[in-house]
Image 1 (cartoon, rainbow, N blue to C red):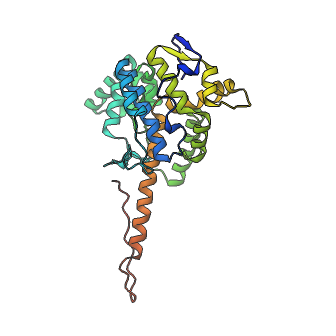
Image 2 (image 1 turned 90 degrees about the horizontal axis):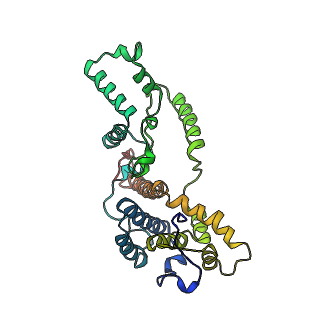
Image 3 (image 1 turned 135 degrees about the horizontal axis):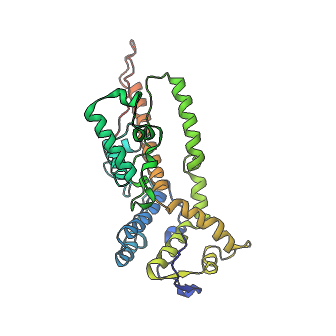
Length: 316
């Protein structure tokens, strides 16, 4: 979160921007409100990163963040409003055609990926299945063993994978029995978590309290504003406005805790997308529960109980 670009160092409270502090910093926010505040900031940051238009970013920051009137408690007038495709929130689903095409597009931008795609097209054209099972060319044999991630370079992409794909593409041999599949998934998940980090519980009150206590909105706003305007705020000043009566080393708290938490949230869209899906999935499951209750109790004959209607697992 801290700017790597040298600039004028701001040290005095009087030099803070006129819009600081914002009312949202002290508000008790609901989950949808937190999601809205995080997403708006990421949207401005992403647009600036993709376009480099600083003046547009400053204007958008004012319109979406400084002048925001977002106060609705359940998100009905925010990012969770309107017609939504809740299939995107469901955590397990088949690979979409778009996601498959996007992965192919990423692979095509590397020489090794191009070779795999050419080999796959040749195999599809000739339809010699024994070539893969018995005498696969070295390129294709290696590609079958390795992850698609080995054939792309996400670091050079302007848009992070997490902003595009629904999740991690995974193939499942559905011919295996359920117990075997559950065990295999647990093993795969443990390995993935070891690399990507743990997600042990839903985002909730504990995270909200920490974000407020450590001022992640303030840290993001001031440091992003500083980058846009060619200066930076000193750690001493940030610590002073965040915790004016702190009895601990506030600057160390800023460096080791606040910036770390802010970076976890605002690094890319991974965290906020997960938050959105959690909220949408929760809304869907709550709606399903209500519909199930109504179905099970409506129009029952006293002499003959009707069979409960099944609830189809669909969205939207």
